[in-house]
Amino acid sequence: MAIYGYGAPRLEIRLEFPRGGAMAIPRHKTKYPGVFYRDAERLGGSGTERVYYVVYKKDGKTQEEKAGRQYADGMTEARANAYRAELIEGKREPRKEKKARQEAEKQAAATRPTIRHLWADYKALRPASRALGIDEGRFNNFLASTFGDKTPDEIATAEVDKVRVQMLNAGKSPQTTKHALALLKRIILSGVRTGRIDPPSPKKLQITLPAVSNEKTETLTDAQFDALLVAAEQSDNWKAGALVLLALSTGMRRGEMLKLRWEQVNFEQKFIALPATQVKARENQIVALTDFATELLMRLPRTSSYVFPGETGEKPITNLYPALRRIRKAAGLPKDMRPLHAWRHVFASRLASNRETLYVIQRLLRHADSRMTERYAHLADEAVRRAAGKVDEDLRSAQGRGKERSAASSPEESKPE
Image (cartoon, rainbow, N blue to C red; front, side):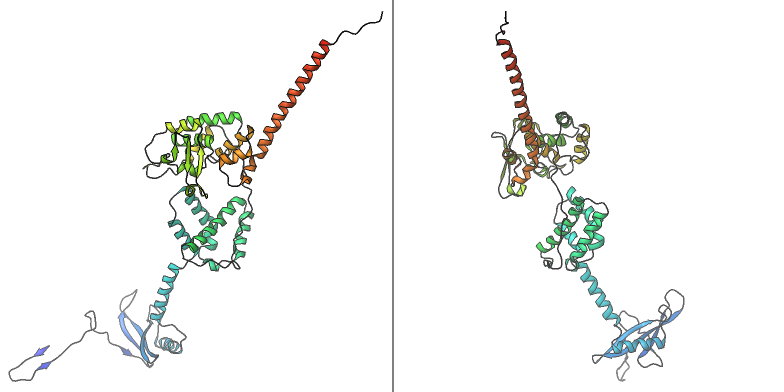
């Protein structure tokens, strides 16, 4: 404020306010050096209360720190003085530094490569699918509680072994246990592959999967096979029915059929071309089409680039299992028969039962290793035994016929006179 008068010297008065437009709240001394308080509105009640502050030097600089409120924190002059002494001696962390540290720890925790965070990254890299949903259940049920908040470097082999034993003792099958631990392994490898973490030391962490016999060979009697064909043809879902018939006539895998595009089908030369990237093989593969399979595909509608499209046609169908289970039920088949992959085994087992060689079956199934095909060897042996039995029956019949002819053609023995 300025006052001006004729011939009078200029007088200027300035009133300074703290930032925000409010006047500075007065400080009140206490009997303790470096401890003062300000009056402030009481929290959780009417009236005012004292807010104590301390002043001290650290690294040659004067620091001011809030000690606490009179009522809300139960702070007194004496307690504030003790608080100041702890700050000076380094026994207590200043509030500002503590807040900054906690914020830094919070930020570090948000980006810390725990198994839970690596799982989130793993999911983000995979398209939504039924398989991903199954993995979600495995993670939540078997991995999250033990490993979720740990980084791979914080996990020891003994912990993984303990989870494996616990799952098996709880009645989980070796296959279920294997899938859960294999998921943990994939999550860690995904983090390594994306550069999020370094590979864990094999001296500290090794994930051992339980041994599982996966050589399940599903077979059908002739009556069951006939019933399955009828149920597939009469299915209320044409995609599910066609998938069953295509699997039975070609032995194709589930993923190969679901991802199949029309451009891969050669109707003139009767084959399906499968790129190596689609079948996870070193070379492209060829699936021979029978007349039955060719006619089946020619009858299907072409509304998309995919043979079995999803609702929009931009992606292949993902979940046909309810319809596939209805086909299995309509055919009167056991519930433990896998509703799609089983038909690949049925395809192979019927070939073996009809005396086809294991080499031919291996070629048709496109097994890279002949050991995968050897699970059908016992069926081929049974076919051979049945064929040998027919030879034996034929020999015995011929032998009987020969004796009959021999007896009929031999001359009547002479009787003595």
